[in-house]
Length: 329
Image (cartoon, rainbow, N blue to C red; front, side, top):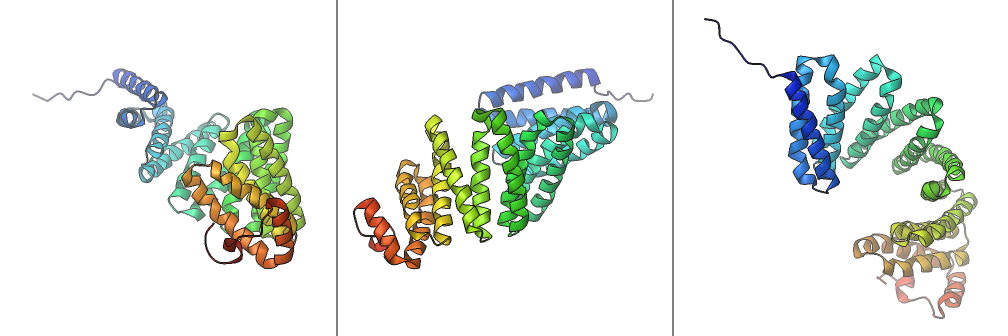
């Protein structure tokens, strides 16, 4: 007698996968990420089973489950596992856009955006840059069809791409990306100032740093000043959220002035920024203080007399030994 093998009922399997996906989402919303992780993994496994039974009808749901699971893995510290899961989701998205590009292109762009972050965190900087370049190309295409929806995504992608290019020493390319991001951020601020002003501030700060590194001190100074003023506006609205970035903008403005030979003018933003680091959590303060110390020492060494005059006018005291000599404040 020929044996009978039971096959999973696809309707029941799909119903269970949906229920598990919903449960994982609820746990995430409640902040219970570790509890959500095994539930999400079970949902992915069931989606894989469904794809094996009927590939074309189920790859969209599998791609979505994989994307969500990769994000959850990354948020729970499992970034080494998140990357291959993300790559599997991306492969399915590429398959889907071969069928319907207009519908599934946003999903591919979103999945690739996450992959850039995880590649960079994994130290795979060149791969991250390559994928980042593709993300920008995809969002350019999406902007052509729906500018209002996708221009913010293109702007953010350009900001991040510029930062990565600068870190790789590709400053001319970084500046081009930064200039385009700045142009778009101004357009978006004109549309909705409250929502997009933080991105304008970020774009200005980034561009100022790239300009300074390229030796365009006058341009860097102009942009840095606007960044400082923009962050001043932001900290009035939400001090806790923007204070660290505001302090970083003061460091950038002081640096731009110092390398531009404006030693006297560099003192005030640097001292203001250094003093305001006292308002930050210890781990953030420990990150920022050395930058201020280094720039102040370099400015003093460049022109001790001009530095001392402005320092004394600003504080009522002479520059301390830690500025003039090795040591810590």
